[in-house]
Length: 226
Image (cartoon, rainbow, N blue to C red; front, side, top):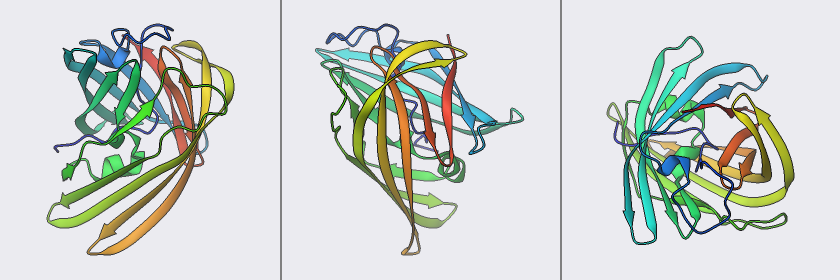
């Protein structure tokens, strides 16, 4: 597998609450850091986990990039998907490889596929405030799944900073911006499209990143940081 599918909402973790332009504090930009997310089903019950490790951190002027290696585990602890993606930071703005937004079902479906996609980032500005409209993003991927040619198009739009809330998980407590969004995902197999829509919410802690996500299909939450 050439491209990783990481859970929607697991983006841009950082170690402190700075609002500055320095990218050095971001967790996903620190060599050898490990982040564990628990995956929940639509009933709110644990349904697996995703573990991320950071490597290949590179700094060039005001830009910092890193490789995020991921492994998804089932509820019983079986490894079901591996891969990697990229995180970047420019001027304090976190930019996350959009493949990290793909839902769990698609991560599992394409775990062993040959995937080709242009690198598309979705942005989390460090100066966001309640009421802001964040940038849309569109991902388009061509997939060879054991000889079956597929195309996946995902458009994430209507990203709105809806409010502020305190969020507590087993890993800590954060003051977060509540971001709502819509994603339209169309999977074409042999030219026949299968679209579906997701309305989701993610909680972004300034100086830290996404703490948890929710939709009618389930969600994720940080459970450990090492």
